[in-house]
Length: 123
Image (cartoon, rainbow, N blue to C red; front, side, top):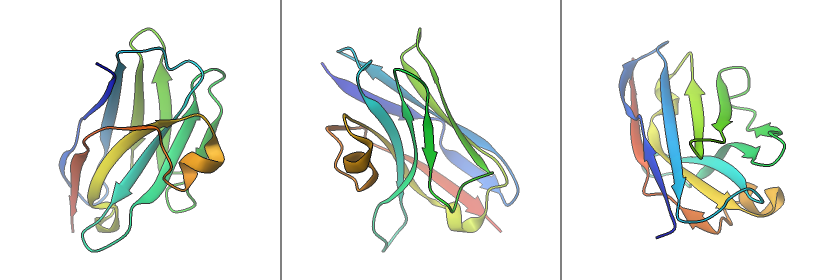
């Protein structure tokens, strides 16, 4: 079964950190770009960060640059999102997705999605 499974969400105070994981299984994702997205209550889903599985190149939304870091572990087929200096505005359900083109993935046109994990940042 091809799937992406997120973990690592939770509750944290302002200024705290969390690390999210996205484990990929069921197929080879070496030709894919992996992305993180988030959706807050009442808001549209937004792009957070992406990493190209083959060469590790990264891309970030302006709102998280300098605070969030996306990385990968090829052996574990897992993508991570290290989130530092968290703010209440970062509260959302975070989902990972896989796609073949960054331009499409950035606008939410992923080929495969995980179920999401809740991140709550309290003030």
